Amino acid sequence: MEPVLASLDGERASYFHSIVEKLEADPRADRAPNLIYLVLKETVPILPIYLEADKLIGLLLEFVSVNRGELNKVLYSREYINDPNCINKVTNKFVTEILSSTLKKYDDGEINTGEQSVYRVSWPYTDVDFPFSDPDAEDS
Image 1 (cartoon, rainbow, N blue to C red):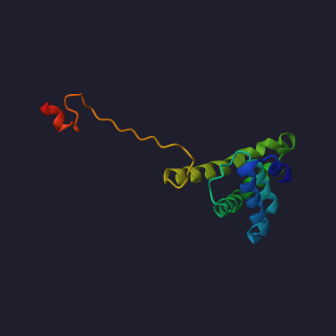
Image 2: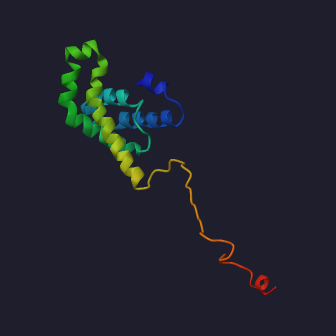
Image 3: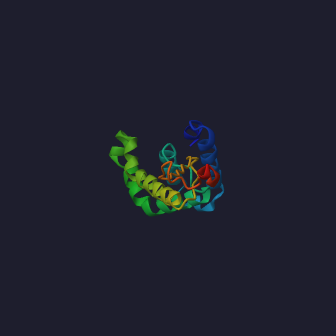
Protein backbone atom coordinates (compact mmCIF):
# COMPACT_ATOMS: atom_id res chain seq x y z
CA MET A 1 0.00 0.00 0.00
CA GLU A 2 2.86 2.40 0.71
CA PRO A 3 3.87 3.00 -2.94
CA VAL A 4 0.24 3.52 -3.95
CA LEU A 5 -0.39 5.97 -1.11
CA ALA A 6 2.87 7.79 -1.87
CA SER A 7 1.71 8.39 -5.44
CA LEU A 8 -1.39 10.27 -4.26
CA ASP A 9 -1.53 13.94 -3.48
CA GLY A 10 -3.73 16.41 -1.67
CA GLU A 11 -7.22 15.42 -0.63
CA ARG A 12 -6.97 11.92 -2.17
CA ALA A 13 -3.84 11.16 -0.14
CA SER A 14 -5.45 12.35 3.08
CA TYR A 15 -8.64 10.38 2.40
CA PHE A 16 -6.94 7.07 1.62
CA HIS A 17 -4.39 7.43 4.43
CA SER A 18 -7.31 7.72 6.84
CA ILE A 19 -8.91 4.62 5.25
CA VAL A 20 -5.73 2.60 5.76
CA GLU A 21 -5.35 3.82 9.35
CA LYS A 22 -8.91 2.83 10.17
CA LEU A 23 -8.46 -0.55 8.49
CA GLU A 24 -5.35 -1.23 10.56
CA ALA A 25 -7.35 -0.62 13.72
CA ASP A 26 -10.42 -2.57 12.55
CA PRO A 27 -10.49 -6.17 13.87
CA ARG A 28 -12.76 -7.21 10.99
CA ALA A 29 -9.82 -6.69 8.63
CA ASP A 30 -7.93 -9.51 10.35
CA ARG A 31 -10.11 -12.09 8.57
CA ALA A 32 -8.47 -11.55 5.18
CA PRO A 33 -5.94 -8.71 5.39
CA ASN A 34 -4.02 -9.65 2.26
CA LEU A 35 -7.14 -9.69 0.12
CA ILE A 36 -8.49 -6.48 1.63
CA TYR A 37 -5.29 -4.56 0.99
CA LEU A 38 -4.94 -6.11 -2.47
CA VAL A 39 -8.40 -4.90 -3.50
CA LEU A 40 -7.71 -1.49 -1.98
CA LYS A 41 -4.31 -1.24 -3.68
CA GLU A 42 -5.78 -2.08 -7.06
CA THR A 43 -8.71 0.32 -6.78
CA VAL A 44 -7.31 3.39 -4.98
CA PRO A 45 -6.16 5.11 -8.20
CA ILE A 46 -9.69 5.15 -9.62
CA LEU A 47 -12.00 5.27 -6.60
CA PRO A 48 -13.92 8.48 -5.88
CA ILE A 49 -13.37 10.05 -2.47
CA TYR A 50 -16.90 11.19 -1.65
CA LEU A 51 -18.04 8.34 0.60
CA GLU A 52 -17.46 8.45 4.32
CA ALA A 53 -14.43 6.38 5.33
CA ASP A 54 -16.51 4.00 7.46
CA LYS A 55 -18.94 3.40 4.59
CA LEU A 56 -16.11 2.63 2.15
CA ILE A 57 -14.47 0.28 4.65
CA GLY A 58 -17.76 -1.52 5.25
CA LEU A 59 -18.30 -1.98 1.52
CA LEU A 60 -14.70 -3.15 1.09
CA LEU A 61 -14.96 -5.74 3.87
CA GLU A 62 -18.28 -6.99 2.53
CA PHE A 63 -16.92 -7.18 -1.02
CA VAL A 64 -13.90 -9.23 0.04
CA SER A 65 -16.08 -11.53 2.12
CA VAL A 66 -18.49 -12.17 -0.76
CA ASN A 67 -15.81 -12.43 -3.48
CA ARG A 68 -13.08 -14.20 -1.52
CA GLY A 69 -13.32 -17.39 -3.59
CA GLU A 70 -13.17 -15.52 -6.88
CA LEU A 71 -10.21 -13.43 -5.70
CA ASN A 72 -8.32 -16.54 -4.58
CA LYS A 73 -9.10 -18.32 -7.84
CA VAL A 74 -7.48 -15.50 -9.80
CA LEU A 75 -4.55 -15.13 -7.40
CA TYR A 76 -3.63 -18.81 -7.65
CA SER A 77 -4.04 -19.00 -11.42
CA ARG A 78 -1.35 -19.17 -14.07
CA GLU A 79 -2.94 -16.11 -15.68
CA TYR A 80 -2.16 -13.99 -12.59
CA ILE A 81 1.49 -15.06 -12.70
CA ASN A 82 1.74 -13.93 -16.31
CA ASP A 83 -0.45 -10.82 -15.95
CA PRO A 84 -1.10 -9.48 -12.43
CA ASN A 85 -3.55 -6.95 -13.89
CA CYS A 86 -6.02 -9.76 -14.53
CA ILE A 87 -7.13 -9.32 -10.90
CA ASN A 88 -8.94 -6.21 -12.16
CA LYS A 89 -11.67 -8.47 -13.55
CA VAL A 90 -12.71 -8.96 -9.93
CA THR A 91 -11.68 -5.63 -8.38
CA ASN A 92 -13.55 -3.65 -11.03
CA LYS A 93 -16.74 -5.02 -9.48
CA PHE A 94 -15.78 -3.21 -6.28
CA VAL A 95 -15.14 0.00 -8.22
CA THR A 96 -18.59 -0.32 -9.80
CA GLU A 97 -20.14 -0.78 -6.36
CA ILE A 98 -18.40 2.31 -4.97
CA LEU A 99 -19.32 4.37 -8.03
CA SER A 100 -22.97 3.35 -7.66
CA SER A 101 -22.97 4.39 -4.00
CA THR A 102 -21.29 7.67 -4.87
CA LEU A 103 -23.73 8.44 -7.70
CA LYS A 104 -26.66 7.74 -5.40
CA LYS A 105 -25.21 10.12 -2.86
CA TYR A 106 -24.72 12.72 -5.61
CA ASP A 107 -28.28 12.28 -6.86
CA ASP A 108 -29.55 12.76 -3.31
CA GLY A 109 -27.69 16.09 -3.20
CA GLU A 110 -25.29 15.00 -0.46
CA ILE A 111 -22.12 15.75 -2.44
CA ASN A 112 -20.95 19.30 -2.97
CA THR A 113 -18.75 19.17 -6.06
CA GLY A 114 -18.23 22.91 -6.17
CA GLU A 115 -20.24 23.22 -9.36
CA GLN A 116 -21.61 26.66 -9.94
CA SER A 117 -25.37 26.82 -9.97
CA VAL A 118 -26.82 28.82 -12.82
CA TYR A 119 -30.12 30.56 -12.41
CA ARG A 120 -31.74 32.40 -15.29
CA VAL A 121 -34.67 34.70 -15.13
CA SER A 122 -36.24 36.09 -18.22
CA TRP A 123 -39.25 38.19 -18.82
CA PRO A 124 -40.87 38.27 -22.22
CA TYR A 125 -41.64 41.95 -22.59
CA THR A 126 -41.42 44.80 -24.98
CA ASP A 127 -41.08 48.45 -24.15
CA VAL A 128 -44.85 48.83 -24.37
CA ASP A 129 -45.86 46.28 -21.77
CA PHE A 130 -42.99 46.64 -19.34
CA PRO A 131 -44.61 45.78 -15.98
CA PHE A 132 -42.87 48.44 -13.96
CA SER A 133 -43.51 51.47 -16.05
CA ASP A 134 -43.51 54.85 -14.39
CA PRO A 135 -47.11 56.17 -14.16
CA ASP A 136 -45.83 59.77 -14.07
CA ALA A 137 -44.03 59.29 -17.35
CA GLU A 138 -47.31 58.33 -19.06
CA ASP A 139 -48.99 61.59 -18.08
CA SER A 140 -46.45 63.82 -19.80
